[in-house]
Image 1 (spheres, one colour):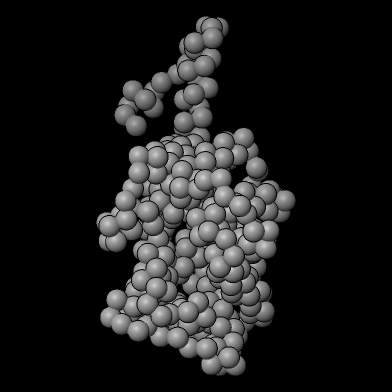
Image 2 (cartoon, rainbow, N blue to C red; image 1 turned 90 degrees about the vertical axis):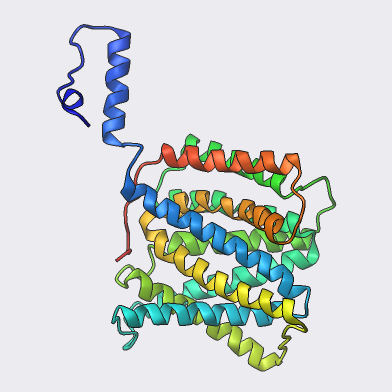
Length: 328
């Protein structure tokens, strides 16, 4: 701010205009809209949303060319754990001996594994668009969970942003009046609850472990669980052709990069802000599918995407910086 801005003093004369101006300036100085420290993680999380969305588009190729859910879940979890291991080695961070709080990271790993299974069950029991829409109730659960734990207040601003984003997602996904399977609905809501729990608890569980190491333990636990199930069932289904292999490779790599980035950035923004930004993921899926697969985008879907983006931007512009917890 220039010299004139620093030397500004509100008028001592009473008046509504002077009082209102002073209040606006005081709020702006206390919580400036433009802050690289706040917006850089937001940009990073937007990249995470695009990366995860790319993984979903690749998953369509993989699943339509012979790959089953268990094989994909196992490979993508293993790749994510290996990526974290490489990052830890580059940082010269030892993985062993296991810290005292290691057990808490296993809880996070189980939550991620449960979310993966439940969302796939939901997609199998009901239209995929409905399953994804119901899964995206997790930002509501994240906000409620953070409020219950005293991390953040469930404000009116948050409620408006979440409702607007949810309405926009319904338009993007093209959801209409369709019969709903109660079992599918339960699975989708279960996936939302488990993912919200992982997002809310990640900065709280094992705060003594640095974020990269904590994320590695979490993803390694998820991978170990899927490897055990795959070994017991021997239900390995690999791609049947080249497009299937391209889809599987993209799914594994994009998921590994996206989920790693998410849980490394999570302590910087907090669970609520992170969940609001991640509403952009289905929008990214629709746009990437339009570009890569030639899937049509209707005017209603574009309008929905604009609503989601506007809700996310408005929430971020008016957000207060999140307290950093366990993000070393």
